[in-house]
Length: 74
Image (cartoon, rainbow, N blue to C red; front, side):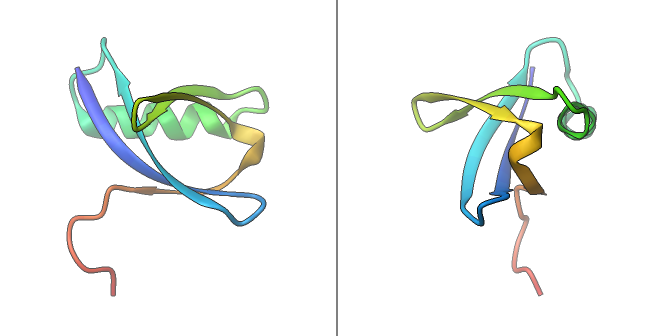
């Protein structure tokens, strides 16, 4: 099972870090591609977690996605 952390910027300007996993995907790159292609659809929906809470993320409310950074952003 692959897991990744996404920083999501919403259309309203708010940001939040969410955890996304999918049991049938073993590669993190494939998981990120799946999240992007899902949210790019008009009816795209992801079930994610923010801490212990379930968060349903609708693609129409997302302005940008950033994959978990690996060091300083320059």
